[in-house]
Length: 195
Picture 1 (cartoon, one colour):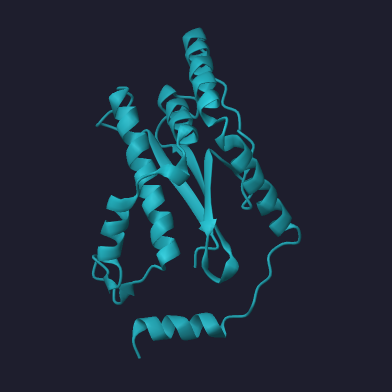
Picture 2 (cartoon, rainbow, N blue to C red):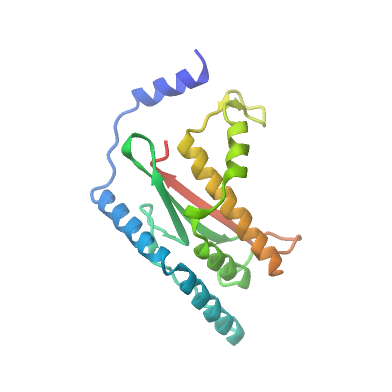
């Protein structure tokens, strides 16, 4: 029996677990709010940039949530969704997290603005998709037994994450906000409905 057959049998034998009551309505509301924001994203990004220049120039930085609450209880800086397997919706929440710097550091504020300004539906993910497809169903690179298997939806979700991260870090580097000697920000993501 190969690893894929074993994984399929394990998943089939697992007990069915239902989500918390009201989770579907909460997810639907989040996705509707995200769709409504897409048309105003450019104006919000420009206003956010102007506000951050004023705030940073004044010496204090206020970091506020943008209302993109996730089903996992945290606020996302951007969300992405597309049809997933078995009629589900593949939903991804992305959040910038500080790594070795303060939550209100200029690099963190800028990274959040950049991420929030990305239209995740229109990203060209072809390069990342090709890389992930070439790695799919191959043995793990670290010597772990088995193979890495991603569904087409997981490949699309991971490709979007990689592309968004590359764009965010490239823009931060262009702005001179990244330094080679220490970490400053990282992109955290969580997904559901992609498998």
